[in-house]
Figure: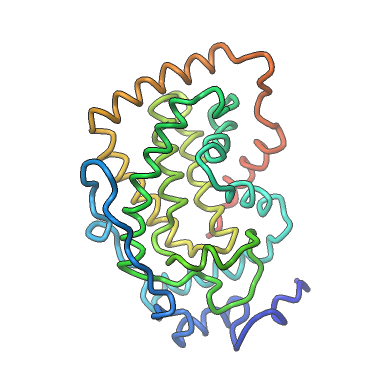
Length: 277
């Protein structure tokens, strides 16, 4: 593992044992330097408050905290691998990219161009959920894994991500909710879709921008928030419109729309079989 990791580390923090030692010493505890203001309340009916139902992130000197540190250190060696490249694809911003990421799981290409109602639905979902997650992040103010350690990340700009706390993961929350939406629309593909939602969240661990427990909290968050939104009349009506649209694309795809990339589908299958734990 000669990647110069140790030479790039700051202070005394290195891999596995030294990552854990740094965490236990307080080098990765909550710091005022990571203070984050909560966003204003989201539009629409009030959603369940994750500050009540989510567990707090693992405390220092606990087995869960040690597990987070170990997983972070172990996954750094995947730099440049196929799983790393999948994580980079999953890190692309925008609802359109997230929707396209579920194409293999759906069994056909989910083209935002051909699914404007679904894309609009997911955009509104994101606009409502992001302020909720921001409030949750501000509650616990957990630093990102790389805050005190200079190790490889799959994203180029550390600064933009580092300005927000780590727990819970917004990507994992939205990825899980996207999976739930698609499962409602394509129920026969629910198992494949929710497996992809899991892999999508785990990509944030592979990237090195989240602790593993941030992701599991995001999954719980997404499940609770989607259950609440699913019961809203406006959301249910928009979901029905998206259902007609996606079924039409599935049953009558345009000739120019290519099927999902077989190599990318194989990478997703492999990622699902090798979870970062």
